[in-house]
Each structure stands twice: as structure tokens, then as C-alpha cells.
Length: 454
Ligand code: FAD
Image (cartoon, rainbow, N blue to C red; front, side, top):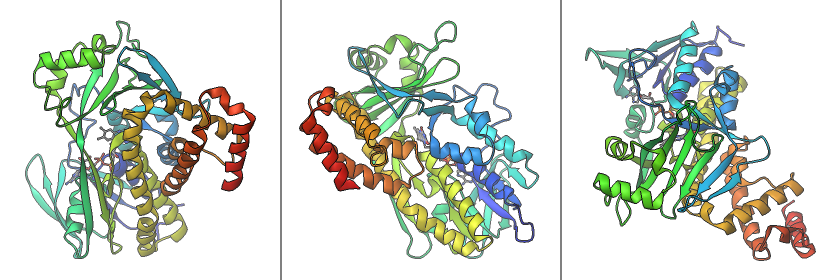
């Protein structure tokens, strides 16, 4: 319950997904919260906003949304995706369930989710939202910051007591911390970029590909994916090298793009009437991993979300990890009351190894999605793995499920996933078909491996 005796005014920079959610957690603990956001209020103005981009939301994200009471509201506009559907170059499909029967990841609109969080924040008397306010300078030592009004150009200087930096991968709060002593920072870009494209709905707003699935066109060195929207369309993302034989550099004209897609992704071309327009109109996004430490400056400034750990999008965990940051911070506030130095320091000690593990997992999953999911041996291995998991539920949870459908810390999941991968490679040399799993000698090997694990 909020304790107004110890509550104090707090400042949040950035009202994206993580900042707007964080404001709710802080306000509900009794704090007065001022939230500053560079962009205009996304709920106002903008008549046509283009088609919204969607994100995969999974258990870690749901837990945080449920904690602030909007799980049900979001569920009504979220589309469950129960399996991966792989499309080969001939348009043949293969399938891989994500988890057990009812387990799914959910396609949600990024803008829709952000708007819902902002509306909820606005309804909280303790939260004040300030839009069109860009952080231009921060002095953490003297706890002062400067904001520029992006509409009027007017500047103002403010004092703060405690500042939460949720201003995303290119965080201005982090930039200021980078100038403090012994600050560790690294960024690394993949040689791949991404391009967003659309699959149109059918004439009656129906989905022209299986609705409740995440579609993948794995092509070895690159891939395309598609997630469903409520209006029958799909958002596609092409992950593609910047340079090389098949690359952004090699596709320079509409005719080249058209020919390439017809050869490599033939089954979707008829569903993308605006393919070449979109390809040249939409920007090419880059893919960066950002690591830094510390995340806290004394007990005055704390980074959360992409500001502290930006990762590549292949595990669909960036937002989920940022939401989990909020859950963990909330738990620490619950346990430690107003001992902010302890809260900040335990938060970063606890979260940093997990954020690092998630960053590695995200790169690892890129290889799986663009390459391995197109390999029948890999799909067989996944089937065998789910048999093991069904037979030994206490000893075996597939890595994907640990990351996506559990709250096991990412670092533990990654460690156990690597151990399981080694076991699988030993077992798979004895397995050629699904039924081989039931052969007594294979069963004996599995039993032996499980005994060694427990
Ligand atoms: P952001 O969402 O970037 O919000 C930062 C906010 O701060 C913005 O509103 C910005 O305007 C504001 N801001 C920035 N600078 C300033 C400043 N100087 N002053 C004031 N305000 C400022 N994650 C998933 O979980 N599932 C997915 O399926 C998924 N897919 C993705 C696909 C792609 C192509 C990409 C690029 C990312 C994907 N992610 C996904 C990751 C996810 O988008 C991020 O992890 C998430 O948006 C992080 O939220 P955030 O609030 O930390 O940062």
C-alpha cells in the first residue's frame, strides 16, 4: 500500500513502453511522478498514422501488465500466435508449436499498447505527463536537467531528486552517465538491417495467411517474418544483409526487388500489392546491441528498458525484458521500502547478468530463425525435445519456453538451454525418425542423461 510519509517526487524521462508502465508502478506506490516525453502525445492529432507496427508480447510482459491491472484490456486486442509457420521457396509450409497446447506469444500493436498505458497514467492523479519535452542536458552530480520544448523551442532547467531514464536505445540520460567516471559502454551493430512491409487483408478483412501464427520465410543467411494484425493484415519484416550478393545494396530498382521477391518469397508476392513502393519508401532500420554499466548513478539516476540494454529483436524479448525490469524494481521497492540506495544497487546487480544473457539469446535466435527452422533435422530435434519435456517435465523445459513462458531469470535459462543443447546433440546421433524415440536403447540413453542432470 502507498505510504505517503515516505513517498517522494520522482522524474521519468521517456514515455515509451517502459517509461509509461513504470510511471504506473511508481504512482501506485504513492509517489508523485513527472513524466517527460520528447514526442507529441500520440493519442492526439495524427489523423492517419499509417499501419501500426506490432510486437510479440509474452509471459514476462503479461505479468507486468497484469500487475497494473490492464492484462484483460490488452488481451482483447492481442492475437495469440501458437506456432511458427515456415514457408519454403516453393510455398510449402512446415510447423513448429511454440509451447504446450495453449501456450502462445501475442501480437499486439506497439502504438495501441503505448496509448493504453498513457491513458491509464493520465487517469492517475499522482502522474503528470509532459509531452514535446526533450532532454537536452543532464548533470547527474547536481541533479539538474535541461529540457527543450520541441514545439516552441523554449528551454527550461529543472532540479530533480530521482530520475528514471527510460528514453530508449539512444538514451540521452545514458549519454550523460557515459561521461561520468569509469563508465562502461559498448554498442555493436549486426551486418543486417530490417525493412517493414505489409501483407494486405482479404476483401472482407480476412487473414490471407494462418492468423494465429508467426510466419517465417527462413532463407539461410536472411529471412522475412510476419505477425498478424486485427484488421486482417500482417506486418512483415525483412531481415537482410546490408552488403553482398543478396542485400539491400544489391536491390536498387523496383524491377530488381520484384524479381527477387518472386524468386525467393513467391507465395507472399501476390499478397503484397504495394511491395516495391513500400520497399523504397520505408526506411532501412539498423540492429544494435547496447551494453552499459553501471545503470545507476548513486541513488539519483537509474536506467531501465532499452536505455540500459538494447537487444536485437529476434527473440521478441526487448519490451518484455523492459517490462520485467519494472516488475523487479517494484518487488525491490516492496521489500526495501524507501531505502533507495539499496533498491538501485540491487536492481542493477540482479538485472545486469540477465540483460546480458538476453542479449546473447537474441543473437542466437537469429541464426535459429533464419537458418535452422528450415532444416528438417532441426524440426525433428524440436519434436524429440518436446517428447523429453513431456516425459520428464521436472527436468526438462525447452529453452524457448524458459525464455518466453516462464519467469526464470534469463541467465539461468540460457545456462540450462546450453546444457540441454549438448544433451540433444548426443541423443540426436541415435535418432533418425520421431518413432526412434521410443526404442529401448534411446529410452535408456535419455534416462541416463536425465539421471545425470538431477
Ligand atoms: P522506447 O520504446 O524506445 O521508448 C523511449 C521513449 O523515450 C520514446 O517515447 C522516445 O520518444 C523518448 N525519448 C527518447 N529520447 C528522449 C529525450 N532526449 N527526451 C525525452 N524523451 C526521449 N520487443 C518485444 O518484446 N517483442 C517484439 O516482438 C519486439 N520486436 C521488435 C522489432 C523491432 C524491429 C525492433 C527494433 C524492436 C523490437 N522489440 C521487441 C524491442 C522493443 O521495441 C523495445 O525493447 C522497447 O520499445 C523498449 O521500450 P523503451 O520504453 O525502453 O524504449
